[in-house]
Each structure stands twice: as C-alpha cells, then as structure tokens.
Image (cartoon, rainbow, N blue to C red; front, side, top):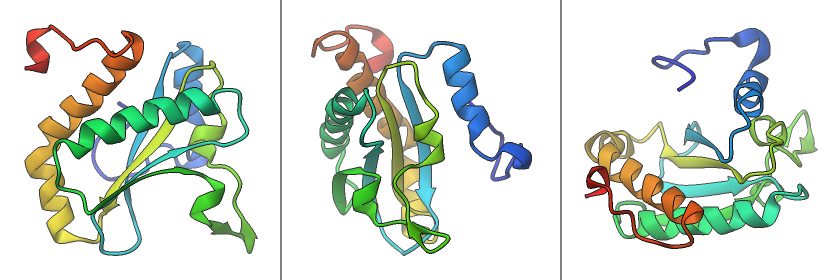
Amino acid sequence: RTREGDKDVRPEKRLEWRDKIANDNNSEVFISFHLDAAGDTRNLKVIYQQGKSNEEISKFLGNKIIDALKSNGGFSKYSLNDVISLGRIENGKLTTHLGVLNGFNTGGPGLLIEFGSIASASNRQYIRDNCYSIGKSIAIAVYQYFHKGEQPRLSIFK
C-alpha cells in the first residue's frame, strides 16, 4: 500500500518510489492498480511492459488475472496490452514505457491494471460494491501463478 486517499503523496518522485519499494524488497510480483482518468467506460485493461526480460511471465499472469476477473463479470471489455499498443502520447511522442512498470526489475511479472474510468459514476460504484470480489479474484490468480494452477485451499479465498 503506497498511499491513503486520492492524493499524490510524493510529488517530487511521482512513480519511481513505488518501483524502489518493490525492488528493495525483491518482490516476486509487481501489480499497480489504477482507475483511468479519461473516458466514461468500464473497460478493464491489464498492461505489461514490452521488451523486458519479464515480458512473457507478465503476459502469462495478466491473462490469468483477466480470466479470473471475467468470472465476476461487471466490466464491458477485458484486454491485455503492451504499452506501445495503447498509443499513449507524452510530449508529442509515442510512449514506449510506463514509469511504474519500467523501473521494476526483480525479474518477476510486472503489471498495471486499469479498472475503467474514474469519470464514470457507475464504474466508481461498481468498484466500491465489488472491491472484495475483485481483490479476491486477483489474489487467486496470483496464488495460482505461484502454485502452477492449483486452487487455493485457504478459508480466506472462499
């Protein structure tokens, strides 16, 4: 957990400090959760950084997470994207990396998940009403990633 509430807690180092926490603790997985600022949609995007040594395992875990979240329903569209395919433009140039993913370098999968638009009142309500089941689905997908597809037997996953 890197912040409380909707505020930028370390504006002098916008995203790099998140990578530092993960790297300093030799995290085996890095997942950054976001609501998209643009649009009025309930489209789930799982994004990985292309061209890094963890690209294939990031795509693998990303697909597991999408499959788990599809079982909940609720999102209009589900997609796994590399950064370039998003067509993000910064300073007049096509962005080829996201800072929050680019700096993660422990070798494990690194993902950014966008849970639709923050501008959509119905999407914000959906996230509020379903945050437990969304979190549970992601936790199960990560568990299965580490346990070769095995279903969790712990009571917290029931």
